[in-house]
Image 1 (cartoon, rainbow, N blue to C red):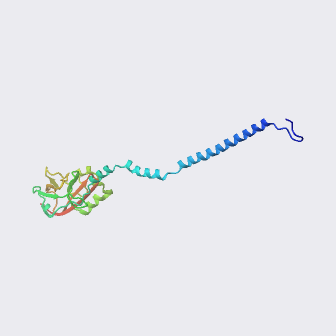
Image 2: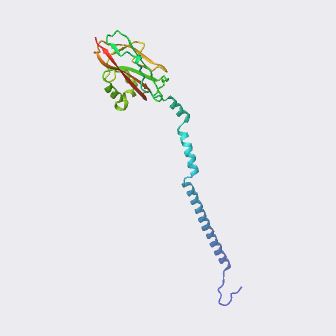
Image 3: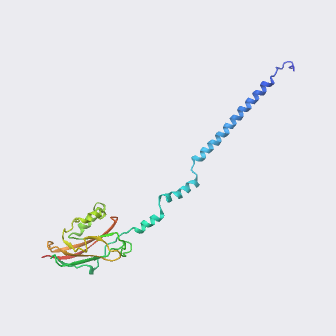
Length: 224
């Protein structure tokens, strides 16, 4: 085929190849642009918090950390003693320091919430004699109630306790478990070494060193 005057000859093969290459590059560019948007959207989706997913985990997390049945059991075992109840007929208001006359003191351990008798078997009772109720209360409260929190210390004299004043019968130790649902009783004599005067019988009720309470009653000791 001859070219018309003034017209340059065209190479149909080269022109067609160039067109194919251009279309191919455009297709790849467009595909890359589309995939970039798609991948970006993919990342954007997982970089945001899904409200539905967040609420689901918020519901499940407490269950995985806390057993509701266990919590209910622990709450049921929690014992908070109120002030030990010592009725007027539960002790003798005037006692002899002769080392021979036997006296008794009875106390009812009660719940703080409703003043009903404590039926738990892991409450400890301790009885001692003091001449200064204010100092004794301060001792029990000192250092974040360190003394009633430490059950092991109950075997030693308390601060401001009149040491060796009460001689307990073998059947009623100075520190003993509080009777479940009924009164706890001590039997003792008063040592002749105790001078006459006004004293206080102090009773502490203590649940595992976690909760505790105390009460004191005044007595008159008749010296030798």
